[in-house]
Amino acid sequence: MTIEMSSTETIIGREEIDDFEAILSVVGTEESDGRHVVHSDYDTIFTWDYEKGARPKLNKLYEKAKKAQWNGETDLPWDTDVDQERLVVENAEANGGFGAGFDLSGTPVEKWSEKEWIRFGVESQNWTLSQFLHGEQGALVCTAKIVESVPWIDAKYYAATQVMDEARHVEVFGKYLDDKLSGHYPINAHLRMLLDDIIADSRWDMTYLGMQIMVEGLALAAFGFMAQMTGDPLLKQLLRYVMADEARHVAFGVLSLQEYYQGLNASELRERQEFAFEAAVRMRDRFLQQEVWDRMGIDPKAIVPVVQQAPERGQFQALLFSKIVPNCRKLGLLDAADGWLRTKFTELGVIEFETWEDTSEEYDTFASVPQAQAAS
Ligand SMILES: [Fe+2]
Ligand SMILES: [Fe+2]
Image (cartoon, rainbow, N blue to C red; front, side, top):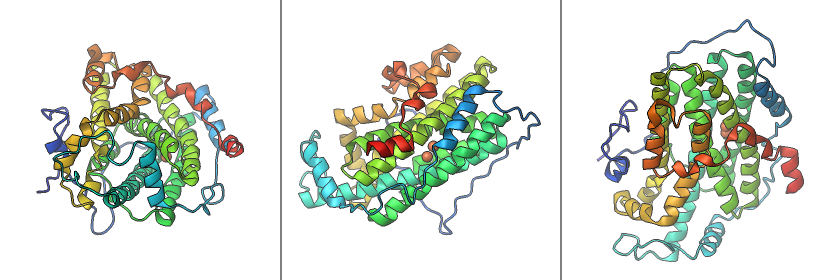
């Protein structure tokens, strides 16, 4: 049975945040006309204060972004041969073999041969890169909205460079999927609901919180994880370039919201905390790869809870929050409104990351394109 959860239904209201039955009941669909329409009412703001550099940190970010542009067509080694099956086998060997670390007895995959595991690995690559692609389009759309809705000229300037960055990211992930991998997946339902919520909200700072802090904070960690794991030099380089951009984008969110949140009261901050927490849960839920199990002919409800119990899996998920939690802390969101978000992140098992480095300055340490080229 397919249950479509409306994007206004809150996760905070869900009785149990680890209710896999509920999570897996929400399945992704793609409209037959190939378009997904989200309605949004928001103010487009002109400013007559054109003073460039009134916000020096945003101005510095903008100047850096202008120099860090790269060309997705010509700066990447697209002639690299990508053998998906070989990559899957090498990755499994490096991690102790297929299914290592999981107790799969009694599950539908207990008797899987190497052939099925390889197919699963290939599908998993297709799925992961497809979700990256959809997330990048979300960033493209959100950042164009920020150009219109943010009231500060330095932020409009910076956001305009990010629109170009995101167009390039959609382009390179799309090209990698088409030229090097073997299939596309529709957007995961949890990711789609999250992007819908971010786009539909009329408040400009919620676009930043949802996209720059939550989605891009997670993307920065996930791309870093994949860049480390993949044996494909093309994907490694592609991700390294994208990450240098993403680090600036997350810093853009932190620097902008830091100023804005100083003017908000406790109940307004509590709304931001709830929004951040819902986004965190939706992002965690999107990593269950339910569509891949489905395509393999396995009922996700029979396998996902088992896979989720493996300790390595928990570590991977927690790592995804390694950027989000310190950035929420930097914004004062953990402890505002009686520490509501601190309590929630503790329940989610990710509070330990609060003391990791935040991204407001860290972006400078990510290699720019010329540096990355020199290192490769
Ligand atoms: Fe991006
Ligand atoms: Fe981005």
